[in-house]
Amino acid sequence: MPPSTGTWRPVVDPSTAQPIGQVAVGGAEDARAAVDAASEVEESWGETPAHERARLLREVGRRLTADREVLARLIAHEVGKPLADGRIEVERAAFVFDLAADETRHLTGESFPADAFALPPGNEHRVLFTTRDPVGVVVAISPFNFPLNLLTHKVAPALAAGNPVVAKPTSAAPFTALRLVHHIEDAGVPAGVINAVLGPGGAVGDALVEHPRTRLVTFTGSTAVGLSIAERAARQAKRVILEMGGLDPLIILDDAPLDRSVRAALRGAFGFSGQVCTASKRLLVAEAVADRFAQALTDQVRSLRVGSALDEATQVGPLVDAAAVDHVHGLIEDAQRHDAELLTGGQRVGNGPGFFYAPTVLDRVPVTARIAQEEPFGPVAPILRFSDEAEAAAIANGTPYGLQASIYTNDLSRAFRLARKIRAGGVHLNDPTTLRWDALPFGGVKASGVGREGVASAMREMTEVKLISVNYSP
Image 1: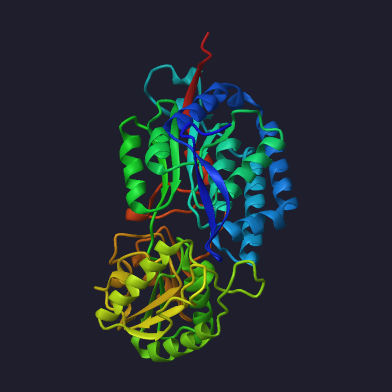
Image 2 (image 1 turned 120 degrees about the horizontal axis):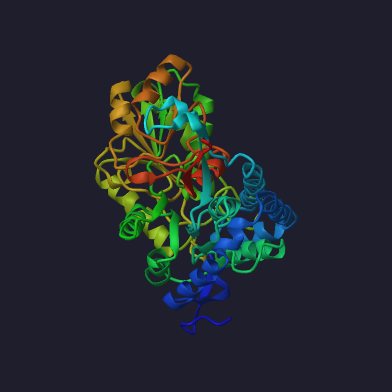
């Protein structure tokens, strides 16, 4: 049906800067209608047997797998993600639906020995146990960089736990989200259980968060927006799961294997043009090996192939839009004003269409530079040098963020010692910062997040614990 606003907006391919279609722009009225539709089926979906919900979720996963190539190309067109990465994203999304189906068997409560408690009297004739009930209508707000998988990480656990969902996908990739909703509906999920509203956060997002019938908001995006959502949700005692900004440090100690460290930095800083919340946004390198590391990384970066997301040979695609290019360029210029050394890159690529920026390496970046304090979300590797482990920990912890971190060393005792000092939701030893297990807890500390994603963790966040007591005294 047409949007209440009566307006449409183009969806632009970042590789060409040309529109690939247009999409309806919804408003607050559409958001409220979507929540009302979800509320009508809240009870019936929550009472649907878990094995039936699991069957439907597995069917969604099967449909996503069969549609992999179409979805990968759609992701490439909408957000500029290289095809190889888009195919992996679709595979992971299908896997998340399968995981959610499996977890319906484990979403259980606990039993307690009532007679172990002296009070209240009579516990020797009681049985105590808990159940987990659906929390209610879940609002899922997702970003552009993983338009399918990050939305799936919100939708699949919510549906598995018995909650209807209203999704507000990114405006950059509406067609990917709508195709996911189409597959969910065609799998047999009842009408009203999954809903999508497209439109600006100020109108649509606020209406979804503030609607009295929504009970949990799961959000991935910037810290500023996440904190605003948390404030609005708190006024009605709603739950939130917030995955927000990060400045993930990749720490390279003086005994780290050089080749392996360089590969990790290459992957962490330049995968999907650095537009990843867990990207290696700061490379912290021991002074003793920094010269060799910087040279080796620069040599590798100069060989990266920049091009259209639809070109199978592309390693670094475009940024999502022109504003992202300007943001990255501004951070690099600021770093140079702070005496950082530009080793390669540092400029826009080509004079033709598309939002391309050259893969960039900066050395001797001071902690006072903006790029050491703000998310670049672009293809840039800032090298910050340190003298010892204490300084490395201080630099790693010296921002408001704490999502993930990595440490490269041949000495695991040093790695464990340093890992304990780092304030982050995840620390990977001799693995990239971008590592994530879809089945395991994922999230940050400080300004990087509240709550945890990961299918099982999300399902626990999306349910209410209810204590039930049974008195069987004569």
